[in-house]
Amino acid sequence: PPPPLLADASEANNTLETATLLGSLDSFYLLSDQSIHTTTDEDWFKFETADWGTIYDSLAIGFVHQRGDLALELYIEYAGEIDFVNYSDSWSDLEQISLDGLPPATYYARVLGYGETNPQYWLGIQPPGIDADYFEPNDETFRNLGSLRGQKVDSSLTIHSSTDVDWYQFDTRATGGAGHYVHIDFDH
Image 1 (cartoon, helix red, strand yellow):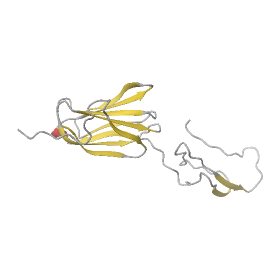
Image 2 (cartoon, helix red, strand yellow; image 1 turned 45 degrees about the vertical axis):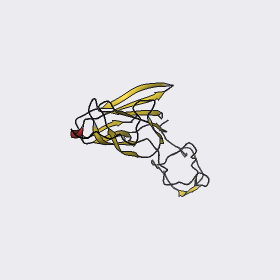
Image 3 (cartoon, rainbow, N blue to C red; image 1 turned 180 degrees about the horizontal axis):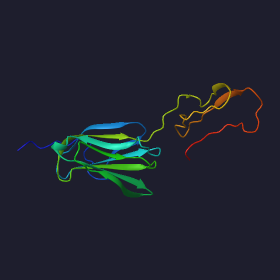
Image 4 (cartoon, rainbow, N blue to C red; image 1 turned 135 degrees about the horizontal axis):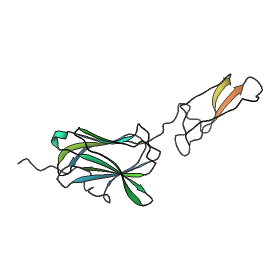
């Protein structure tokens, strides 16, 4: 018989209560060299997000399907309760769950083999995160926009953290009147 598979460095994370703590994530996270080393093994991971998920955010595992089929499940902790969110179980080498529309919260990822083993997989998380815009740093000093004439629209500006404040300075060429304004538009 083949030699037994080895437990990965994240063991013992076989239950929600013993989940591997990944912390608060705000940039891509990759954990490689994981395994489902016995037919009853399952791996749990706990992570937090700080913003609402978008279409670019996801949770995924990658592995060689022919070495053992794996599935991925996602759970959310809300008001002290743990609720199932979604799962991915296909015939490919990648299982992926979108985080689009999910609130900032604590999440649990569960990787299992439904009675199969797999000697190696990776876990990847692209969490929601807001990058600083190209005017940063403008938290304490004004970013000078110069002399404005006509309408100026910029749709790539962000408030990228809970402490971010953006200041701007501009000059006008004439006295303001009806129909002249400063306006911001955002998704509340």
